[in-house]
Amino acid sequence: MLRNKAAAPDFSLTDIDGNVVSLKDVHQGRPLVLLFFRGEFCPTARRDLQAYADIYNRAQALGAELVGISADTPANHGVLRNDLWIPFPLLSDPTFAASTAYGVYKSDDVGEGPEPHGEPALFIVDADGRIAYSQVMTGPKGIAAPAEVAMILVYMAMNQGRY
Image 1 (tube, rainbow, N blue to C red):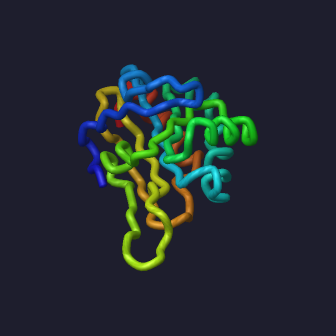
Image 2: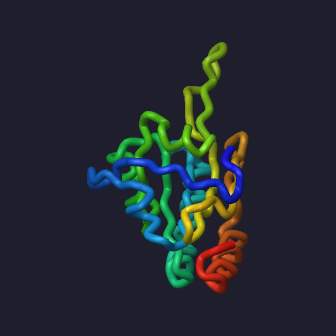
């Protein structure tokens, strides 16, 4: 897992419209919340994405952006976005390149365990492109509550995007 103050790894992922999006495209020198989730099939991921959709406008008012990342296809992300009214970008990581770079890739290649996947995780990247906060879950239990993240974003807004 990435440590706080480490440089946020770059990525090139596809959005629901087929556009390739990099870290620089979504970061733009402001706080960025990266929500790694298992996939549209996961009820916990769906719950977490809806909860973050509810605070998206507040996060933007604090100068932050949110992005969801999973191995789902752009088409699946489109369905998920429409089903749950997700206002923030959802990016497809089918090769687990971003998940691996952020230390959340899980491969259960022993026995008949689940397919490889990205663990639920949340990273906040500060204005300088460094990890300001991180939480990785080792199971489908969800990620930090939006209210907790909102408090971090309030602090960052008062400190020029830094934590």
